[in-house]
Image (cartoon, rainbow, N blue to C red; front, side, top):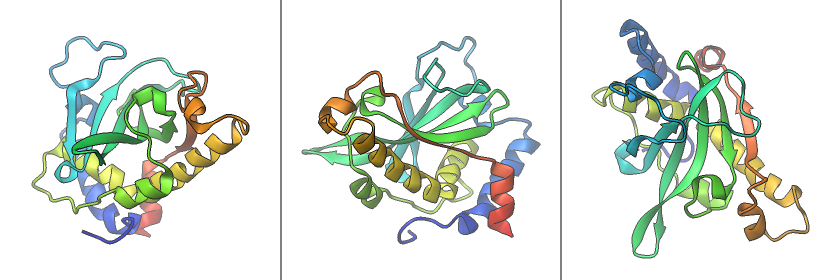
Length: 206
């Protein structure tokens, strides 16, 4: 396992190869995940139990719903969670979400308030410290490989957004207690950054 955050340049070749394989198969991550779904239901999580990633250190699900400041071209988004200890058991803390367009391509990374996904809230420094980034082998199924590689490739972006998320919590209502803000249903989006996978890969591989 690489120490600290993975570097985009180190992940870029495997990520590009994964994208090439998707193109050859004439598919995309959203189509792969929703394979067999005949009627897509708003708000429902796909798959119900989530997708396990990176040796069980991460998991995610996909869903579609209306949301504040949602890009007009968004079809739905992946929510990514990291394993963390909660007493004697393992809990899942939300890290970030990835918007996907109607072609199954990434639009932006974003973070949300605690009430949106529930689960324990972990401050950015502690959350960065607990994140695990195992290497991704080619033997992993294509969907899980893409999901794992997009996380690794954008690890610095995610880390930056977590810092922005926590700063927003201190700035949005300076006089309110954090626990009150975390449950405020008028506060949904905390940080966001658009992505251009093609441009980002070119920059990483240059």
